[in-house]
Length: 85
Image 1: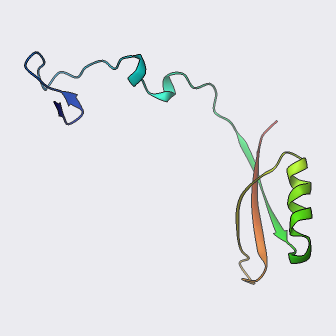
Image 2: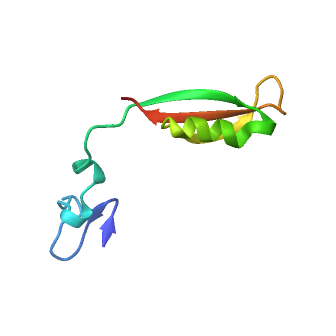
C-alpha cells in the first residue's frame, strides 16, 4: 500500500521511505548536460510562409509556435529555437 509516496504494509513502516529500484529512478539520474537554446522571432509573409520556414529550418532552427502579431493580428509571427553552438 502506498501512503503519501511511502510504501506501507505488514513488513514496512509507513514513515520509512523505500529506495527506488533501477526501473523507478528519476530520469534526472542519467541525464547529461542541459541543452542551451537560442531563440528567434520571425514575421511570416502569407505568400512565402513555407519558403521562410524552410530557409530557417535549413539553418537548424525548429518551429516552436506561430502566433498573431502584437500590432496586427493578421500578421503572423513564428517563434523558433535551436541549440546553441
